[in-house]
Length: 258
Ligand code: T3D
Image (cartoon, rainbow, N blue to C red; front, side, top):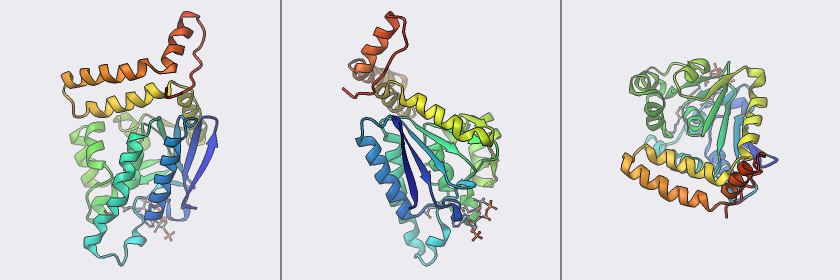
């Protein structure tokens, strides 16, 4: 199986599972991921996702052995599989945590950056490997990088294709946090469990608002916040949050969508 899906209380762990190829992506894997995202989105009891890689790497990007023999003009069509996957990942109505357990290269790096909160082990690194093989960063790389680290660093990261150590990625704001390798999965599970116990509807709407902020001006963003706040305010978790505050107790959120 190219991916493994494990159900935990209120969240799912998805593990990229081709360790012998450093979890390099194939069309089959993209289809499996797409189905796993659909299943998570359709299940109200699934309130967060955690994504990681099996073995020593997170993901080495496109499986280069799989493109041998494909006509060059057809290679771009691989993105017909990957682009919908990135869109689906961004639109998931729940927080997505990525635990980068080793090298994340090419599309693998940008798949990680598409997640909501990225944790990485100390030994992990991010490589925009595309320039090394005469390609451009895809799977959203040219969109994510300048927004996360600014244009100056984005240009160097994309054009030099050098491995960026996890600690530098965290220092530059490309990812949330770097942790000791042997603590990575414990910390990632704790984070996923914490998010899965949150006000899921509000977190999903927060994701949408932050994504829209990339293109909206302030006026439009204020309008959007009003609309999304209306949606959040009718959620059972909002009522519970206020009740819990007034009763001076921790809120118990259910994540129910209505
Ligand atoms: O064109 C399109 O539109 C398609 C979309 C493309 C999107 C992309 O992602 S393009 C970028 C593709 N990825 C790469 O170019 C990265 C290639 N891999 C590497 O540069 C290095 O493997 C790493 C920096 C990731 C890790 O290096 P290292 O030294 O830790 O490991 P290694 O020895 O190179 O790799 C271990 C094995 O995994 C090795 O196999 P072997 O010799 O033990 O049988 C290696 O060939 C294999 N492997 C690593 N990356 C890939 C791969 N096999 C297939 N595809 C890979 N991407």
